[in-house]
Image (cartoon, rainbow, N blue to C red):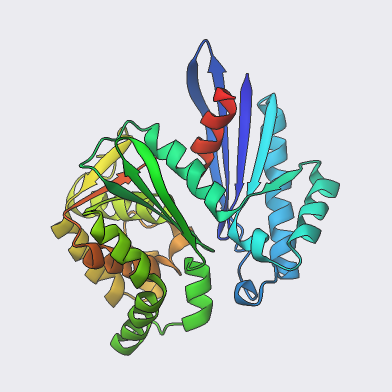
Length: 307
């Protein structure tokens, strides 16, 4: 059976096509395109008309690819931008009219569950307990894992598109702006972080695009560009991370465009993503950091196969 998973994210629409035969799963095709659903409206709970049209066009492109691959089952999942938008249902209805795809708008909690399902399928077994962090455009998910099982999950509306629109940092970002953002993160996350510290969590597992980009930047600077491509999970050297963090914070948008390993979809949001990551690392005194290749769309895939 062939499956297509479409992840309608706030910043990107991701496509995964896979085939399951005799209990074995083969990934046939992956793609991502910049949807920028949060542009000009995420903090007012609106999807702008331009973003709607951009999203529809991406889905029409994906439909052609899906049809070409003779997919048996298609599942489209929508997350933060669509679930919080006042016109989210109108957008979902328009998608159904123009593509035939019926979109499942999932809660932040369900999103976290599916992310966890994907991460655990990588086979990662770090020091326990640990917390998974998935940095999105609209929301960020935290999932606590103990003894190989998810024991706590939280979804916060603190995605990078929301922070970008709220703070509109300079180019490059200033020290004052960094301090303002960190103060805001303390206000929003200190209670939850305290709960994690009580559990003794100091291992962080990062999933999705920001961490993929982070690993790519590290690989291009310190190793060969293809160093970690075959690994489903990779431990990130914290000293190397600090160097990349400083480079990103000091960079202009134009400089980020030229960084080897930079995902061009993320040039606008990568500084905020690394500030968020640094905040969590420092707050938890993280001693071990991993990047994993599987996240939401893989979690959806394996959940479909298992059911």
